[in-house]
Length: 77
Image 1 (cartoon, helix red, strand yellow):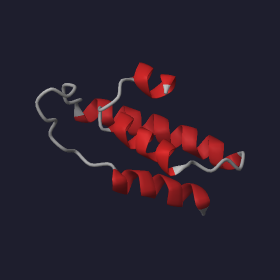
Image 2: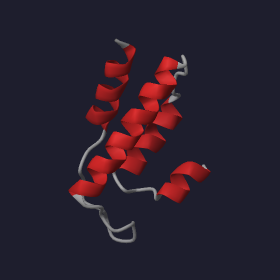
Image 3: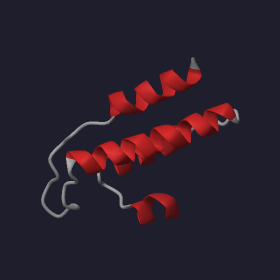
Image 4: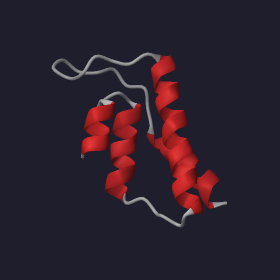
């Protein structure tokens, strides 16, 4: 199933790493879970429409889920 594969791929690429000095403040586990759920929901919808994410888009999603991008940065790119 394409949707399950895509969601598992994002989860496996997403890690809880500490944020180095000069980067954004780490997000809570609760915020990370909310972001992951939102991205999974969006991906499921796009998969139903036949849209395939590029490697760059998957990387942006990973960075948003991990707190490296704010919502504004994520949507604006």
